[in-house]
Image (cartoon, rainbow, N blue to C red; front, side):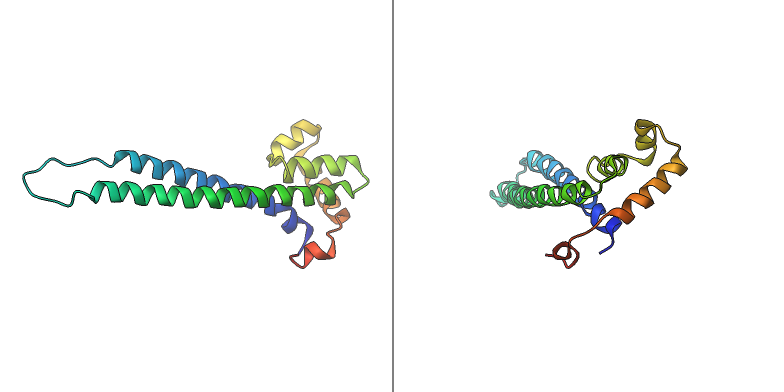
Length: 141
């Protein structure tokens, strides 16, 4: 696995976590919208309750997935920190931390570090070349 691909894993996992959080919000809205319809016709009295129970079950499943993903993200970020700290150049470390741990845009990093955007990309390529991904990580644990 290339350094850039490895370091980018945390960002992608963070996106998936946020997506699941949005799904929970949507399901919570659906669960609270479950209402009874008043009608002369006999109907299934458990229908609204069942829809709410299904939504609650899905919410619980998603929360469990999110907790697992957060644990994975924390472990992955710890691994990434150790890879970044293995680089001697502090500018490279700062750049990689801002990009792959803080998930800042290139523009924000350039402003924060006081660099031109083109120079920042060159610096980034140099930093990636200095990354040493341990064999156990390269092979996927």
